[in-house]
Length: 130
Length: 456
Image 1 (cartoon, each protein chain N blue to C red):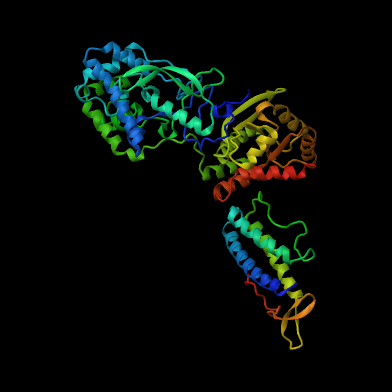
Image 2: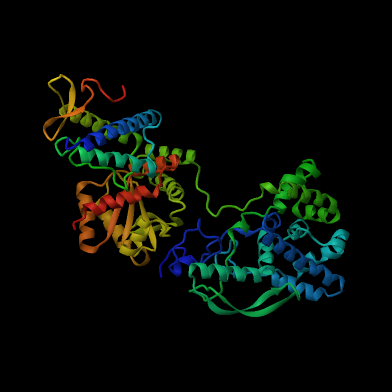
């Protein structure tokens, strides 16, 4: 992580992407081939953009995919597939950026150094049980 | 100009789709198969419409006044003149030129004012009732008489719409404009749009007044009322016998009229185009999926029929359907669908600007693989107002070689041919069902995919 602000951004993103994925999983169960309207597509792209800002090239799930184009017509199942890959990569990113300090508490790593910002135990997922 | 089924707006490059226009966009070479139903003016919540209806009925009843005063000749001349309105272009004429009623029919109509006591005393409330007394009077005559009596208002409406949309108008003298104050036809110079082909004036009619069949009609009277309520299905009478019966049983006719007035909330204008329901679209696609490629058991004809019905509905209202046509090239029949480029979406505006398309050609090919010759055929056909953008509707995606062929065509001639396959049609049907996006966006996505593959 680069700063505390980025940590806050990351935590907020994880909550949002998790909830959005939940919604799309439910939609996909009923109608996997239904397409997204423009509003939902914009929301999904917003979340993907923020994810791409945080994840570097090595950590992104797909090197050739950044977000859905304006002309794209993805289905619910397409979005579930993409978002679940991003969620997995973001979780891995979290693992790599949290370490135990001398007091055996989990903290975030900022610019390669242990910070004083406490982090949740990476073995406990902060995501929904799916 | 080689536009297929040209419309007034296309000729003057006015990009408007029928859905957005307040009026029925007239064709230049043929009539619009709809009729002005005066009942829609009567039942309208608009005071303008109801006032026009009152004026219409008063003008018609003035004929009865003339008959009472012994001026049958004048009445007959007015009625004959009123019986045709070519400027409006409604009906089933393939040429936009109809014919007036003859003296005999005019006399028959005028005789109602002396034969039927109640009409002599009170006139008509719904003049379209004359269909129930006089033979040879049907929806087209009712529509034309209404148009003629309302011509002055229709002229003002046309001028207003032309101003709004930028349709050019020209100085034209019309000699059959009805003056409802003096109850005569007058000659007047007005500014109206005209048919660029034959220079005849064109009048625009509000969509909200149009129906396939008038609410009060002879066929409806016979089928839904007379047979059931009057004869009880026991007697089978000819139309002439029924009309004669009506003339001597005014009360029976009035019961029907009252019934139609009571059910007025069911009377609406008919949409100029009605897309197929979602379930029908899904069934048609399901039938397409099951069709083999090629011509076995007329699979090609069936494919073309289903695609025609599907695409015209899926792309409505963003693309107005113009025509399907069959042309023969080297002994092979090729079926195309032609759509007007209404430029209702930015992507369609781009197609118009970059490729000059006033109309879009969709060439239908029920083949397993598209060959070089298929692309060449469509390419040769794309000319003039068909522009340099065309669509092949086929079963399977283009092979790498054929896709490269289309890219080379763009590189060499700046012509764009994209393919819509079963996959895209299925997506369009799904989008049509979900109503979350527009089926035309599927074509847009294909176009963007093609553009990205083109060399810079």
